[in-house]
Amino acid sequence: MPIPLVIDTDTAADDCFALLLGLLDPRADLKAITIVAGNVGFAQQVDNAFLTLELAGRLGDVPVHAGAHVPLVSEWVGATEVHGLDGVGGQRRTNAEPASEEHAVDALVRLARRHAGELTIVAIGPLTNIALAVRRDPAFAANVRELVVMGGSLNGRGNVTPAAEYNIFVDPEAANIVVSAGFPSLRFVTWDPLTIASTVFGPERIAQIEALDTPLSRFFVRANRATFAFDHAAGLGGSTHPDSLSVAIALAPELTRRERPYRVAVELRGEHTRGATVFDWRADAVPNATAIEEVDSAAFFTLMRDLLAQRPHVRRGPEVQPGSGGFARV
Ligand code: BDR
Ligand code: CA
Image 1 (cartoon, rainbow, N blue to C red):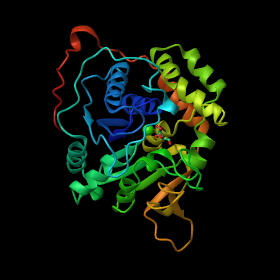
Image 2 (image 1 turned 60 degrees about the vertical axis):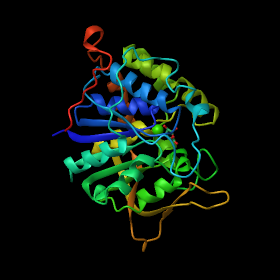
Image 3 (image 1 turned 135 degrees about the vertical axis):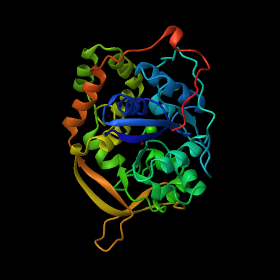
Image 4 (image 1 turned 60 degrees about the horizontal axis):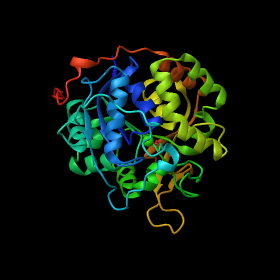
């Protein structure tokens, strides 16, 4: 049985590739895409989700719900220096599908209730929507089977500040609500060391993807260019793909080689450390999450390469009617 899934995303670059996995991997039954303020402008993120749906040939199958336009307390901080201004290298959707009229938080609460004990949510942006869903419905966390969060660092090393990783830094209050909510399974895919050790696509891997010469591989290479340049200049050896890994881990248990329980807290007040995740490594800490510590990096790359080798049937023309976005409520 495919896994009922929601991807909560700040759609740019690696978020789009993560969506492709959710849309095209047979192990996933993607119920909704929910958008949260993050990497690039909000409307652009919605456009990028529809562009990805279009390229996957899934337009009209999976609703896109717009969520929180700003973090709970902090000012919004984008990541256009990492992903470029639009996050997709200038590629544009040709459809005019509108986002669902249902707010992302309402969709999250409804889907968690409808699929109580079965729904997996993969959160690959700031945690604002997820925190609002926790606040909206006291049963929300208990209804979710598993929440995979791309965020934080296991070793105190951030990427936007010395101590904070971007997704947590943008909305630390939301992250604090999420780690305190009592999700039955809360799994962290962290920036450092996991992302840096296991998700880097260097020039040789990018060349392999480019050689596929499919619409999806061409989309990938172009949308990934800014991130590749940024991460490469930062000394990482290529582009990083933590969002894709997060969806992959939810779908393919065999990728996870080592995972350990931790008590994780979010720093809200530190002078230099606001937005840092503090993973309590001590033996007597009462866990509220797990962190994935080691994955099969080669198998992850193979999964992504095979995904991008696909040639989905893309519906165009009269089948894509502007404004025809009446999605069934499931
Ligand atoms: C995370 O921040 C975003 O820019 C990426 O999409 C990823 O979710 C990495 O820190
Ligand atoms: Ca993201």
